[in-house]
Length: 124
Image (cartoon, rainbow, N blue to C red; front, side, top):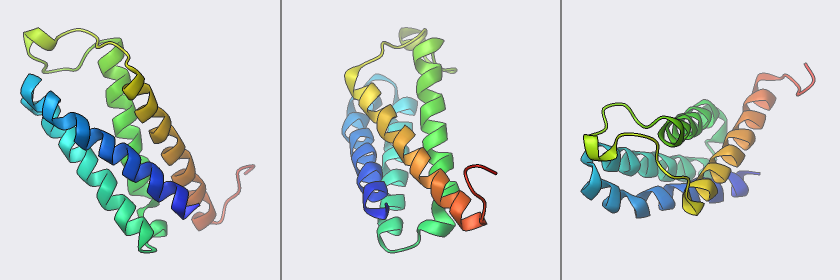
Protein backbone atom coordinates (compact mmCIF):
# COMPACT_ATOMS: atom_id res chain seq x y z
CA UNK A 1 0.00 0.00 0.00
CA UNK A 2 2.89 2.39 0.71
CA UNK A 3 4.23 1.92 -2.82
CA UNK A 4 0.85 2.89 -4.28
CA UNK A 5 0.57 5.88 -1.96
CA UNK A 6 4.09 7.06 -2.88
CA UNK A 7 3.33 6.65 -6.61
CA UNK A 8 0.06 8.60 -6.34
CA UNK A 9 1.66 11.43 -4.36
CA UNK A 10 4.60 11.67 -6.80
CA UNK A 11 2.31 11.53 -9.82
CA UNK A 12 -0.03 14.25 -8.58
CA UNK A 13 2.81 16.34 -7.15
CA UNK A 14 4.62 16.12 -10.48
CA UNK A 15 1.46 17.12 -12.30
CA UNK A 16 1.06 20.20 -10.11
CA UNK A 17 4.71 21.13 -10.65
CA UNK A 18 4.31 20.65 -14.41
CA UNK A 19 1.26 22.95 -14.48
CA UNK A 20 2.70 25.58 -12.12
CA UNK A 21 4.62 27.68 -14.71
CA UNK A 22 1.54 28.26 -16.89
CA UNK A 23 -0.50 29.17 -13.83
CA UNK A 24 2.25 31.47 -12.53
CA UNK A 25 2.12 33.38 -15.81
CA UNK A 26 -1.67 33.64 -15.81
CA UNK A 27 -2.12 34.42 -12.10
CA UNK A 28 0.91 34.36 -9.77
CA UNK A 29 -1.06 33.46 -6.63
CA UNK A 30 -2.61 30.43 -8.32
CA UNK A 31 0.74 29.41 -9.77
CA UNK A 32 2.35 29.67 -6.35
CA UNK A 33 -0.37 27.44 -4.90
CA UNK A 34 0.28 24.85 -7.63
CA UNK A 35 3.99 25.01 -6.84
CA UNK A 36 3.37 24.65 -3.09
CA UNK A 37 0.96 21.76 -3.62
CA UNK A 38 3.43 19.93 -5.83
CA UNK A 39 6.30 20.42 -3.38
CA UNK A 40 4.20 19.26 -0.41
CA UNK A 41 2.96 16.16 -2.27
CA UNK A 42 6.48 15.19 -3.40
CA UNK A 43 7.87 15.78 0.10
CA UNK A 44 5.12 13.63 1.62
CA UNK A 45 5.88 10.88 -0.92
CA UNK A 46 9.55 10.94 0.10
CA UNK A 47 8.68 10.68 3.78
CA UNK A 48 6.19 7.85 3.18
CA UNK A 49 8.82 6.02 1.12
CA UNK A 50 11.22 6.36 4.05
CA UNK A 51 8.71 4.58 6.30
CA UNK A 52 7.07 7.52 8.06
CA UNK A 53 3.56 6.97 6.76
CA UNK A 54 1.78 6.54 10.09
CA UNK A 55 2.51 9.96 11.58
CA UNK A 56 1.93 11.62 8.19
CA UNK A 57 -1.48 10.13 7.42
CA UNK A 58 -3.31 13.19 8.75
CA UNK A 59 -1.14 15.52 6.69
CA UNK A 60 -1.72 13.46 3.56
CA UNK A 61 -5.47 13.47 4.14
CA UNK A 62 -5.38 17.23 4.76
CA UNK A 63 -3.27 18.05 1.70
CA UNK A 64 -5.46 15.90 -0.56
CA UNK A 65 -8.66 17.35 0.86
CA UNK A 66 -7.47 20.95 0.39
CA UNK A 67 -6.47 20.28 -3.23
CA UNK A 68 -9.81 18.59 -3.96
CA UNK A 69 -11.85 21.36 -2.36
CA UNK A 70 -9.90 24.08 -4.15
CA UNK A 71 -10.55 22.37 -7.49
CA UNK A 72 -14.25 21.92 -6.74
CA UNK A 73 -14.49 25.60 -5.87
CA UNK A 74 -12.57 26.59 -9.01
CA UNK A 75 -14.83 24.60 -11.36
CA UNK A 76 -18.13 25.42 -9.70
CA UNK A 77 -18.00 29.09 -8.72
CA UNK A 78 -14.46 30.29 -9.30
CA UNK A 79 -11.71 31.06 -6.85
CA UNK A 80 -11.93 33.98 -4.45
CA UNK A 81 -9.40 36.79 -4.95
CA UNK A 82 -9.09 35.92 -8.64
CA UNK A 83 -8.24 38.82 -10.94
CA UNK A 84 -11.02 39.91 -13.28
CA UNK A 85 -9.53 37.97 -16.20
CA UNK A 86 -9.85 34.75 -14.18
CA UNK A 87 -13.11 35.31 -12.36
CA UNK A 88 -15.86 32.74 -12.73
CA UNK A 89 -15.72 28.98 -12.91
CA UNK A 90 -12.88 27.21 -14.70
CA UNK A 91 -13.46 24.52 -17.27
CA UNK A 92 -13.05 20.91 -16.20
CA UNK A 93 -10.03 19.47 -18.01
CA UNK A 94 -8.81 15.90 -18.51
CA UNK A 95 -5.62 16.66 -16.53
CA UNK A 96 -7.72 18.15 -13.75
CA UNK A 97 -9.87 15.03 -13.58
CA UNK A 98 -6.85 12.72 -13.55
CA UNK A 99 -5.31 14.81 -10.78
CA UNK A 100 -8.50 14.67 -8.71
CA UNK A 101 -8.77 10.90 -9.17
CA UNK A 102 -5.21 10.55 -7.87
CA UNK A 103 -6.06 12.79 -4.91
CA UNK A 104 -9.20 10.80 -4.12
CA UNK A 105 -7.20 7.56 -4.17
CA UNK A 106 -4.50 9.16 -2.01
CA UNK A 107 -7.14 10.40 0.42
CA UNK A 108 -8.66 6.92 0.62
CA UNK A 109 -5.34 5.12 1.17
CA UNK A 110 -4.18 7.60 3.80
CA UNK A 111 -7.58 7.40 5.55
CA UNK A 112 -7.30 3.61 5.73
CA UNK A 113 -3.88 4.02 7.31
CA UNK A 114 -5.24 6.49 9.84
CA UNK A 115 -8.09 4.18 10.87
CA UNK A 116 -5.72 1.23 11.26
CA UNK A 117 -3.27 3.29 13.28
CA UNK A 118 -6.03 4.41 15.64
CA UNK A 119 -7.23 0.84 16.07
CA UNK A 120 -10.70 1.33 14.63
CA UNK A 121 -12.33 -0.55 11.81
CA UNK A 122 -14.25 0.57 8.76
CA UNK A 123 -17.41 -0.81 10.36
CA UNK A 124 -17.13 1.00 13.70
